[in-house]
Image (tube, rainbow, N blue to C red; front, side, top):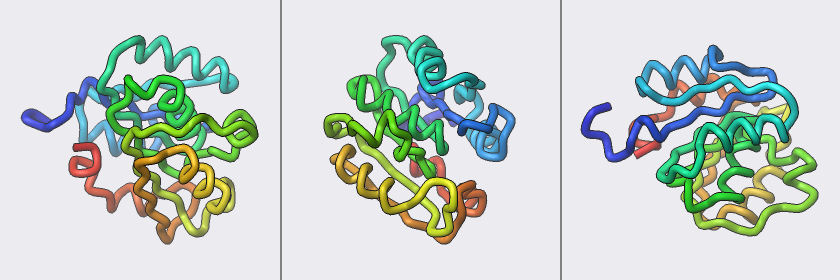
Length: 164
């Protein structure tokens, strides 16, 4: 993506709880953005967040794409370190996880785009939408005709435009 308005080396994809760096979304993004960071995460939330802090360090200008549990991780990182994040993309984020939902973080102004499926049976739309509107002051919300995996939606998104 030479000449793009963002640094591909500052793009990271965070997979879901049961996902990996070899999943459908990871492979789609890897094909579009050579050099994008797509690490594997394991363990509980604290362990995964420590790995994420270590990976992103003190660098700024990050664009985070997080799916499900990875969306929760991206949301937490952004709320804790908003100065490091240029843009946050959330795909059916698990914001209902107690660590986030029971004590929502203070609002942040980071540009955030959220996609959530109407037919999501794993992460309910209504509480995610309510929490996202409460926490992300610069939120663009897309409710789509898809399920939790968002497999149809992710292939329809204009990723270069979304991440620009």
